[in-house]
Length: 67
Image (cartoon, rainbow, N blue to C red; front, side):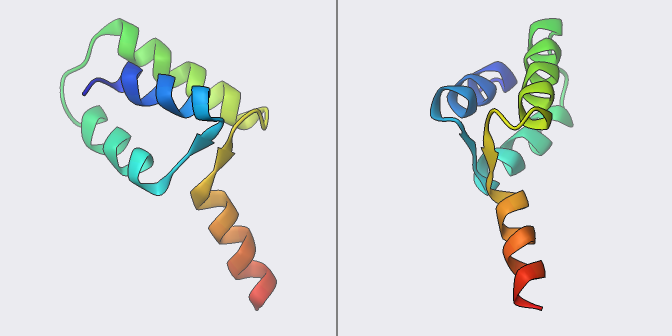
């Protein structure tokens, strides 16, 4: 699987799961094409604008609320 595929799935679903984040970390450790880098940057932008939900952020917020 390519970075751009993971990004496309996350954007289409409006959600980035923990599994997808881990997959991205692993893919980013390897050699990738410019198109994959651009897709990852798009994902970062979309996430920072709140256009997709991130499971990791939701879990952190939940943990903070439970303290």
